[in-house]
Amino acid sequence: MFTGIIETLGEIIELKNDGSNLDITIASSLAHELKIDQSIAHNGVCLTIVSLNENTYTVTAIAETLKKTNLGSFEVGDKINLERAMVLGSRLDGHIVQGHVDQTGRCSSIEEKNGSWIFSFEYDNSKNNPTIEKGSITIDGVSLTVINSGINTFSVAIIPYTYENTRFNTYQVGSTVNLEFDVIGKYVAKLMSSHETKE
Image (cartoon, rainbow, N blue to C red):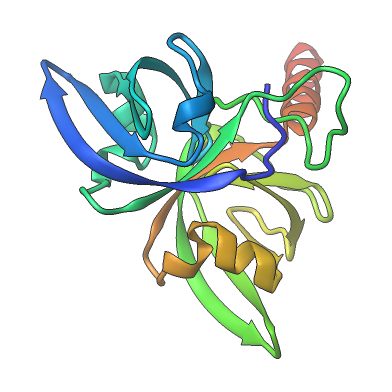
């Protein structure tokens, strides 16, 4: 489990295909604190460390992960949001994040608002992933509050700290992002759908 509070940005320094898998090597200030088999969220995707040294570590993304996320579009030199798994008993500063991306979305507009920003996104609603006004959403691993919730669109407000310390400062209209919808909202939607089917 994660909280959606990004600890730091890593830099991708090597991408290596291994059959249908992709080995991703990342330089990070966290590397010296990590260990083999530890789970880290990379742009909201939970991946396991397979090798490491003092300044870098490597994770493997399988074909299914590459298909459902934006990890396959990364290039050497790109920055990536990083968060270690939450510690039981500590504050849940964001919201409950599983590290299992539901689908990708596309940035549809960016509007500066006198020191903050409104980012809007659209996504394929055929997968029945709802957003809820003032509910939670995870974008590339960042826990945020939904505003302007629509059938297949939503917006989030980004403060300067988040803009400067996550990948939000790299987004442009058309950028693809990983979306993990609120786990409680997904369960409620699933229960409601099941109830309506039975009636």
